[in-house]
Image 1 (cartoon, one colour):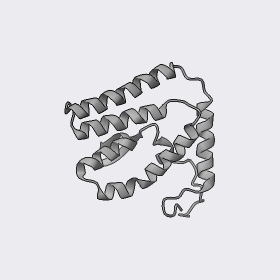
Image 2 (spheres, rainbow, N blue to C red):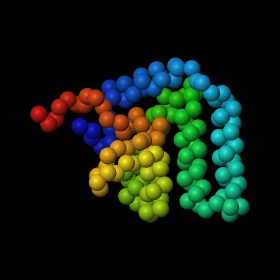
Image 3 (cartoon, rainbow, N blue to C red):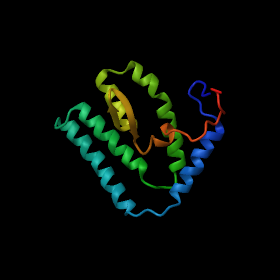
Image 4 (tube, one colour):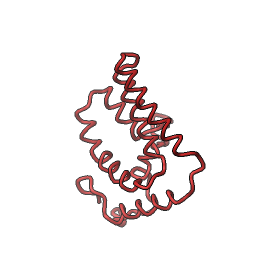
Length: 148
């Protein structure tokens, strides 16, 4: 069982191993050029917000999406980024409790790409790439079967 939002060390280490393995795969895009484009986009968003061209909500959503895209790019510090993102994800329940409805929606966009609802029940969830390791179902519970 996960106590106080802390994952067992072996689960975290398995996620880190998988992340290292995925990062070893050569990129098919020009990562440097894409990183520059996304960084430029962050600067332009900040300017647009400062000029009043976009609302605070639009700015925060687009900024978070752009940051997530930057975080998804391969680099040597991805395992450190993984650990930092894990901290943010674990803090989400508290942030959601105190957030306004508009901010709750923004926070959801950090981890959710899409939720499929059929017959008033959740049929599927598509997580953002950065959040996927924290929310995808595991094939086997690391703590064993607690419901025999």
